[in-house]
Image (cartoon, rainbow, N blue to C red; front, side, top):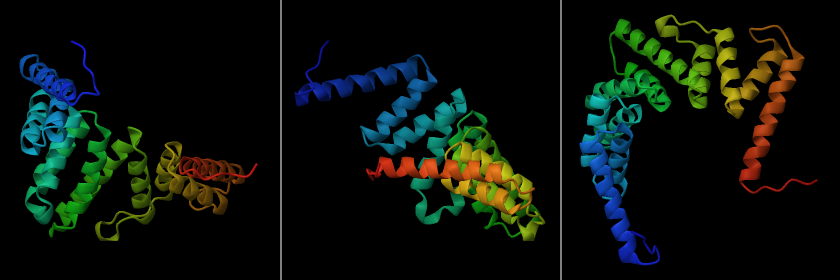
Length: 233
C-alpha cells in the first residue's frame, strides 16, 4: 500500500499501521527491539506514558533490553519528581539493570543516582558503599565511551571524599580526564593540558600539554562552527 503523505488521512493511517506492526512484533514475536519501539510509540504518538512504562518494564525484566530498563527508570523519575525519595531504590535497580544489559546511559544514570542517594543515607557505612558503587558505575559508563561519565569520574578522583576516606587520586583524575577528552569533552581536555603543564600528579610534559590544548581548541572550533560562528581566513 502506498501513502500520500501530503494527505492527512494517509498520514493517520500510516501511523496507525505502524502501531499495529509494533504490537504484533512485540506481543507475538516478542522482539525486544520492537517492544522498545512500541513503548516509544505509546509514549510519543499515543501520549500514554503509563502504558509505555509497562512495556519498558516488561521488556527489561523478560527480554533484558538495556534501553527499556533505562526508560522505565526515567518514567519513575518523571512521575515522582515532587517526591523522588520513595522511588529511588526502584529507579536505581532498573538503571543498574540497564547498565548490566549494555546501555551506557543506564550506567551513567546509576552512578549519578547512587551518588545522590548517598546524601539521604545517615549510616556512614551504607553511604560509603553507595558512593563507591556509584563511582564504579560511572567508570563503567566511561569505559563504554560515555564522555560525561568520564568527566564526572575524573572530578571525583580529583577531589576525593573526605567523609568516607576516599583520597584524591591525581593519576586516576588524569586517566579519566584523558578518556573524556578522547570523547570530545572540552573541559577534560583543558584539565589534562593543565595537569601536564604544571606537573600536577604527573611529571611535567609540555608536549602532552600542547596535545590536549590543541584538542580543546579543535573542539571549541567545532562547537562554534555548529553555532554558525564564522572564522576569518
